Length: 413
Image (tube, rainbow, N blue to C red; front, side, top):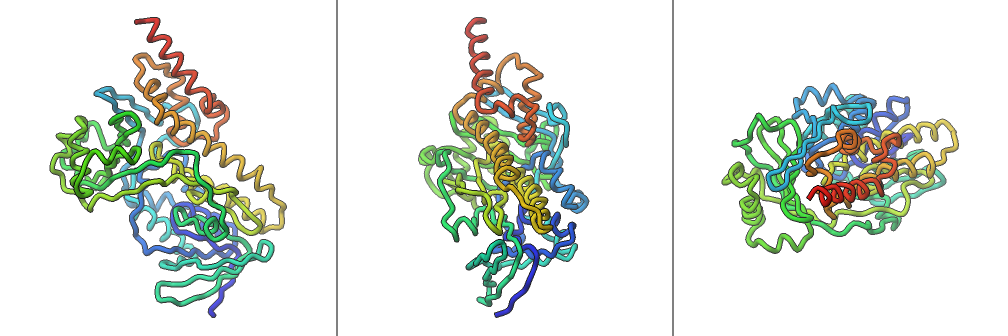
């Protein structure tokens, strides 16, 4: 059986895997990436957050991404029953990037993988991991390509950025259910010929359609727009027919979109994803670290996926480099705890979105601008800034604010 030796094997060629691979390669170590899919491939998570720009910059990807002329994104707009709440990243509480991109992920992810190959990192597409044997932190991974050819990769360390594939958690029975309830999405890309250039496309629009039901509208620079409904699975039983018939009926039921998207061309048959929230019982082990969605995926509402993927891989890459240099790493303190800080902050905001707490805050008549800027930092992905009270106290601050707004409304009424 064919065999190769590398310092680090990276599983997955998405943003998580490529960021880690590039940073480790820059440190002088040999890296190989194996990817189950053929690129370019479709995946959701098309609206990035400013915090991920720091990771993309360190990985050396920004120039190549800029050349693609993706749609620049400067904020997020929330809409409910005619009311609009705008967040502009330039107003955020935390110092950092104030813009990012909205991207078709097939082209975006391919760009990152191509950057890795240009630096000498092999990317083996359509290659599946079938087994991993650990001997301390060293490992032998068996992979199989699309033609059935098997080979082995000996590595001193493994970074698992396999996303929904969840390679190591599945091989070693590490998966566990998330505490978030199951949800479903029905989505497609449309030829958005009626798009208003005055109002868009410089930010994502999130529409509150009903309690717990929302819509994403993500314009791309090509004139194509990604649109999807998200909610508890039973909501979608209200409409019947094919996926396209269902999505057109749902769009027709939303006043904010009805005229704009009436009869628009759908670029592909609408697709369904559901019950996506999952996690694992640990983020690391002797010889491996999990990054990105393979650790935990929450919900698409605040576009946290790519940010958690790139930031976790950025942090993991530096720890792997130190590990390869012979340092003892406290993975719990230096990796799991900070990553869970970010995950739990986003989780609090996701839960507050679905239970209506953020409705109260976003659409209040007289918002406190200082607090709004603090919340804006979270929406920009700066969920590790503990100087921000709405990060540090993420589990209590939102509910306290919503109660205060409701009290003031009652007293004024």
